[in-house]
Length: 247
Image: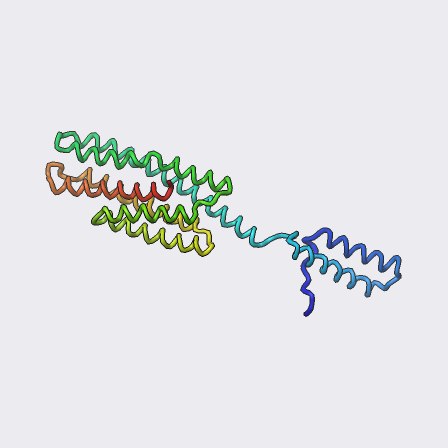
């Protein structure tokens, strides 16, 4: 089998070896240039191949991995911004609810809305923690952590109903896919961050619905306040989903 030569320009010592052979061949051994030059090239290429086999040269896989880490870090930065925006929107909703829900019979609904909004306050800090872990070179996920997340999400699903139960079921299925990736030796962090991004976007959408409903609802109507409470519970459930992923 023919020797597969590696580009010697990536290996200074290989280039040096080829140069030495060329000088010795022409000056000391008096070989013609047409003989010495190809010999020097073969020596340089062979030396480069040996260095490559010893792991001394550039590793394409490391470069690829580094690129993935940069992409993941950038996505986490975008998530931090989304989480901060969600926190600001939730604070505005909290203020609006406090102004509108002032009757005694509305206090329970007010408490539910305020609770759902308050839960968003720590989200940017928790995502910053994920960014810090990435900066320290730590993996975002492990098989035991994913297994625990699945157990927690399953318990929440089993104790829920309606749209909230469907949310937890979707999260359980996503986590099970991530666990399969991790068990197969793949990096499931990208999938984890994608799940988190989807949840924050969905939470923002539900918050907007809740805000719109609060502004237009007939607060003297039991059916209207019940619908508001359902949206508040749904928004709160999204927060639980997110907190489970970033815990």
